[in-house]
Image (cartoon, rainbow, N blue to C red; front, side):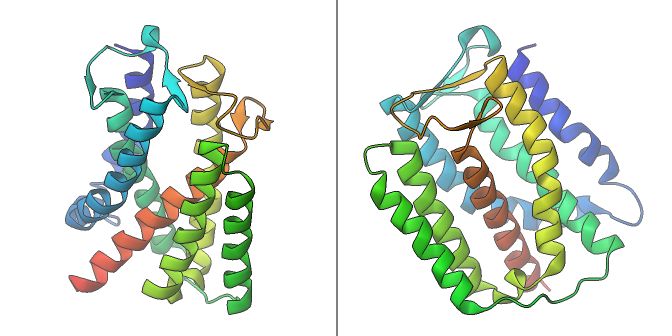
Length: 223
């Protein structure tokens, strides 16, 4: 078994087992999960294919089994299935055990936050990863604002984001310290937190927030 495949299994095994716990019953919400995956993971996989092809990042051959689709290792594709499963499961668990409350969030804060991301992107057009992730981060905030504003005001949403950063740090540290994923120095700021590129923190936020957004929208549309 490849190292990257083992990481995928470690990510999903506990949420998968607990999905059948009688209070959570997450397995009954899989249609909403797959709806989110179809939209969000597809978008990020397209970016992944393009970024890999132009050399923004690469995967160490000794840590993957060697099966690829569109230039991506099968383990990388699975990553966009196992990670959202775990993140959305955390979101459901937080909502189950914590009464949600609305937080105060000035809409000017949202707009300023998005504009700052766009400004950083424009200042880093020569750094492909920095440029793209900042645009995705800005788009994520605006999409939530326009499609499900209450999600931005949800305390449980932000608690979920905070919790997911714990496994994010562990998994990303493993991926970048072995390393399984290597980054082109010209594609990002070269600023790292331990071995993790700074941009990965924004990458994670944009993905997780989008997975939760479209999962939430699917639940509302399906009653």
